[in-house]
Length: 499
Image (cartoon, rainbow, N blue to C red):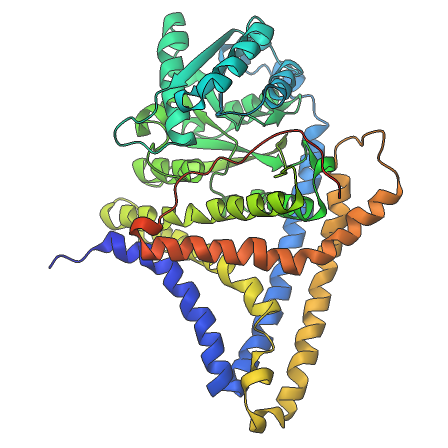
């Protein structure tokens, strides 16, 4: 029987996570002294890693503030870069989002400090979105259609063979149609086109296209890279309950930390890609949930590792996950985190690609294998090990262990290390205040205090809205078949709820 490598690779992330968690329980029961030493060492490692990542977070924040103060469009002209030859294709996939959300995103494009006649805007609708989606698109075209180089509405048919209903299939359909209808009609060379794929709630800041164009024109081998902004989930942050704000900023902070470590950086959500790359790899994959992260591995394998992510250190703003009720928000947050956790489906794709591709060096394969597996393993296990399982030896280790000095020291040492690591969380809370958008009229100064102390719930959110959905996603991938996840559209709106 031929060995099924792909199935083995699907089982790998979830099995590693479960072996770790169940092993913690078993060794806390059978070998409490040994596991106690491991827990203390692991807590120290986690503390040092928190400090290390906090340094990267501050570095990215400093770089981002500098980038936001730069007039990139003027910089393009001052340095005599050939920006005039570049065109930007902006693809906004949508389903049934309300016109208010679409309008805000298009208005942000109008505020760009850039030549708007260099922007092709595509509103990528779904046939499955029905009359509601069509009417929203037509309203948008009526109000904004004449403001850019061209404005196109595409309709992605439902039920095409080999496709999953989701963002990847929609944006691929829209980009391919836009190339034929808009770009080819004007004989624009593909190497002069940057395709920016944004969720329809994404709002750019004024210097985005200037910064993107500058990064592209000054990059080494620019056609072998994807350009990644920093996602700020702040469009509706004042409408969001505390738990949604904490999770949103946590996601932002993680992406900021990664931008200071470009050697580990892969794609996420908003991204800008040279059109020749998309043509070479046949656009985003149409049958996966995590197409926004899969695109990196498509290109990395296609170009035999000669592909990278260029961090822009410049933000775009997106919606925090908010529903009309607190309970609805919590359910949506969990589903969103689980969908992001389903990015573990890239592990078998990556490893299978490494197995077949003999042109990528062993060193690069080993680096990425460890980096990606360690990332998903940490996601599913670390917070549970630190905040939930760290006291297990005391609870189930038996009377002999509980009479030892190590048993007495374990809770105290663990508590101290966790408290020290909370200092990093406190500094993140302050940084979260700095990233807030202009406050509404009703916002009082005393609310800043509430926005700081809300971070006290971070241990709970790390487990319930981090480790558990990540573990569920990896378990579903491990089980396969009917347990696999389909694409889930995050609901978007502008209805405020009480905190």
